[in-house]
Amino acid sequence: MLCVGLDPDPARMPMPLDGAPDAIERFCREIVDATADLVCAFKPQFAYFASQRAERALERLCTYIRESYPQVTLVLDAKRGDIGSTAEHYAREAYGRYGAHAVTVNPYLGTDSVEPFFAHGGGVIALCRTSNPGGDDFQSLVADGEPVYLHVARRVADQWSQLGDCGLVVGATYPTELAEIRSAAPDLPFLVPGIGAQGGNPVTVAEHGADRHGRGLMASSSRSVLYASSGDDFAAAARAEAQRIASALAIPSIPSI
Image 1 (cartoon, helix red, strand yellow):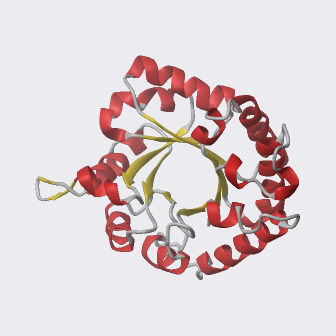
Image 2 (image 1 turned 45 degrees about the vertical axis):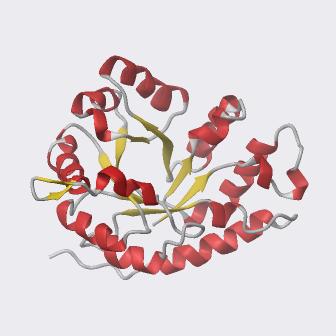
């Protein structure tokens, strides 16, 4: 149930690639090759590529993942959210240009803002209870007797899931809320960022967030895997850290009744 986030930071490139013109693509490919058999998903973070004018590298990387590891889900972490006509172009970008299986979206603009993504046959993973402390500003506000994040969870589980494939973003840093949201959305997959550098515990995530079959999670770790070493052994170190997290996430399957 491990997802490795691909967040190539030029300030943290390992020494063998530091300053290389193709460092972003080479770095991400080596991480992908080192961890692909351990993961259920890869999650390239769009901003890390766009800020470095590396959209073409992202295109090639996504193609490489899709062709080399077709069993792995490709999630474009772009947090899109806009009116329908603009969302149509975001959908074309995510599924056409980058070939993503799913894209993260901001649900604030409502159902019509995500309908274009479903029309293009891709999945959406809606921000629900995010891992950052500032998420409390709005997500925890109480409306009609329950926090906004539960309203989001129920809307996605009960209505958006009738339109296409859906999931929820729920931070690893809030295990109590993770369990609460699992109760509200028992069958949805969760993308759970915040394991590793942000302090989320993979064992706790599995215990609180797995579905009734002991699955249903894409528990995401980025920095702790990507930057496990800054030396020549960066790919091997990334694999070792990914193995550690994957083992902690592995809970016995629960037979369906």
